[in-house]
Length: 380
Image (cartoon, rainbow, N blue to C red; front, side, top):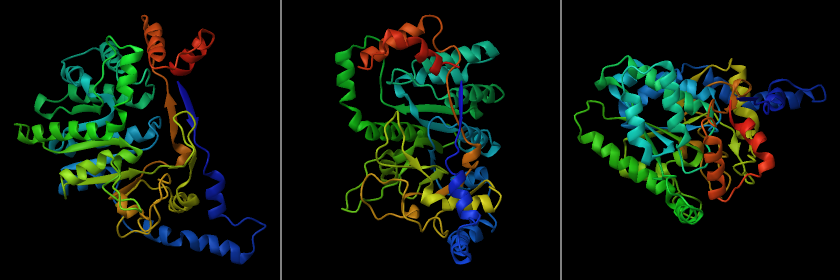
């Protein structure tokens, strides 16, 4: 398992909080004034992140959480705090996730609802789900793997009517009988991914609404742009993201919330992210001044909401944060966040060759000389 500490903001925050010796008094004061409105706002009373989310559920049927990097581990402590809250168990009860092919939902349900698994079988069941989780050859963020096990243990102590349901929303897919030709055809359908995920959610959510389950609300975990609402770009076109479809289908019933992230910049790829602090570190500096208190609040009515939406810089737009997200959660400063990858036992029992073959099918064959290093990097 690999742990990485984010240290990117240390210099930026220090510059905003502490006047450097080379600065004049006027320059130092200007930096202090730059974050003063944010500090003043944060010093007022605010809810905890869990209370904030549960408050949103009082007025909305659906809450979308915009997660940080999939690999970031501490945010999943927050997610588990939310879903294990008694109010969530009693009144919400349903989680939908971007990660995980919808083709595996029956297996997921069977795992979460089976009785009296041993600790060894809990681990084995989560591993079996994870090995076939997605259309990608490998998915190794550790915290989502842990979430499966935590949910099983949580459900184990609940009657069926209060057990948490989780549903994968990603593209229908199976590795059985997959060939390079079939995989290429599948990849050609990915531009429709957001629409397909949204349609799958809407079908299932409407089914829940008609069911005998007294809990008819849902928490949705999406990453990055998938969680945006139905805002428009500068030329008036809509951003056809997952969130757009939900906001249009369920007007007045959806809230989306950002968990404190880094901005993702042009030049980013899956293997080489290019990131920067939100608004040059002003936000993080303001939280540092106020003790990095964990909190949640609406963007509307806050100085944070009035800032330009610099989280997304790939297309020209004139949006502010309040135009794209309902609210914001601050949970753990960057210096306490952790990127954690690696799944224990992932390559055991012949799955090393199976996973390597999947990379070959996908057109990303791993050289034989690099196999040992690859397995070492992706297994805990």
